Length: 183
Image (cartoon, rainbow, N blue to C red; front, top):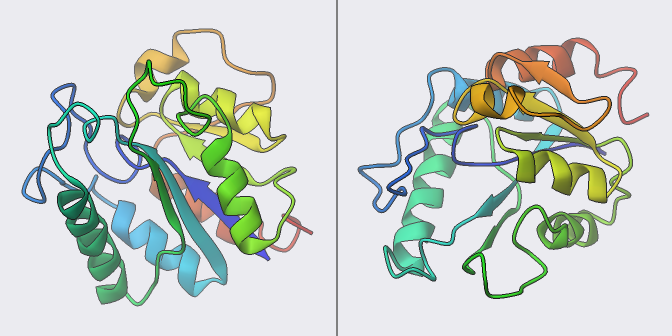
């Protein structure tokens, strides 16, 4: 199985320090929807793992989050692709869960769902927590320069972190080299 895991805010859609609280505020980064569709059409399963502490903070509810993800799925479907499993952590940073990145709980959920070993699977994110979660499950940390990526790049990165301008560049690389990846 060719699997790639994406963070959401800052990778697929614009991020906001004020949180993405509605479908209207959920704005795709240029090229990201097309990139997911291209990956899907090339035989990749695209899963999403996203921290959504805005739920715990009371900024939006699960129905709103579900509507955002339905919008993501619809946009990708319009381009001929599909989004696989979407997992989210609804907890706040101090709730002690095992799913909030940088903890690996969501990545383990994806691995169980698809019955795969995460060794070498690309996990694409824009934050230090994303990269640390990838390392925790022996995945390949991939940093994009969208979202918080520029700021993250100015900090020490895990060894072997791959860096790309955006999700479109990641998709182009994976599709181009898919014969040798995920063996």
